[in-house]
Length: 372
Image 1 (cartoon, rainbow, N blue to C red):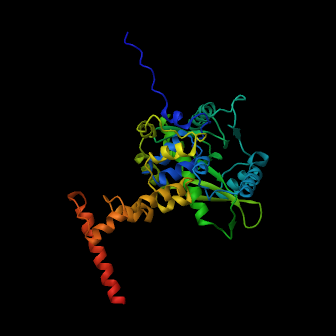
Image 2: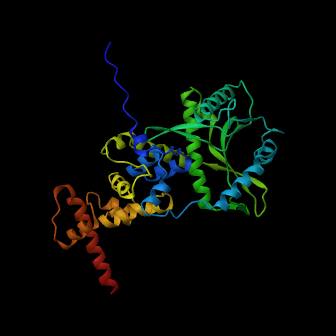
Image 3: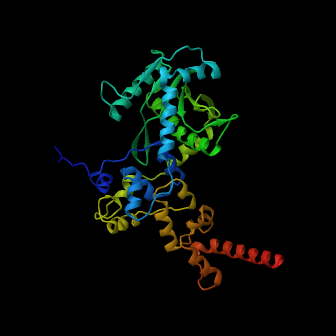
């Protein structure tokens, strides 16, 4: 027999240290796919490092996220929707979507036989979905299901609020949020963010259908958004198209590099263990290439750290993705200015970029002369 080759160690777990990993969430995946070129975020999320703790250890305070009051309000609204075996959701399905049902056939997948581990719940969720899709069971609502999706070579376990069936014969993801719908209109930014997260769950559900050999057309390309109506706590329902978000998500996931490969490229001394000294952490983080753009400030806990690094090195991306793309092959804005001043001559690899840069500079000077 050939000698047994031991499995290589999980480098991502080694980097994280002794702390338990934080799981992937739909929010994390949408943030990751918003900037798929960022190897730093890819490794941090795949290893399960708490980016908030890491940023604080490096001296940066993340400046976004839900307040405790908003979280409490959302939990209270979810409790209203869930009350009486989702009586309010059933009412909305019946009155707004014409689903001929008086009460929910509900299955709670929050635990299976007293076991609440994600892998056990995922297998049970998959089994229930397959039986329903084959017509062997009639369930209207699946509460706390678990789905999986491969992200940067790692398996992510995802937990949608609810899945529903028997709406035009298809499965729908349901998202329950506490931002209000006033006079038929909700905050467009909040709706867009929820749609991106719902698209993660819909794509995971489609992958589960494809893996089981089921028709993915049974999964709707819309999702159901349940929010408070006007200034009351009474729920209302909106059906929102996800085709654009699904296409973008599928494309961006395919662009992500494997996080394990990125991690193995780090020196053995590198660590992301947040119990280590900040200087050690900073040295390790800087060895993970970031792809900072100003939009990162709205969704990444490490954004202020990466921004200071981009400022220090004068990376073009600090001025936005458009500047980064237009200065392809030029590593800093200082270098770009040197080309403009004639103090540096371009090589063959960036001659075209510099030519365009010089043309833009000439146009800007002409415009200034005309307006002077």
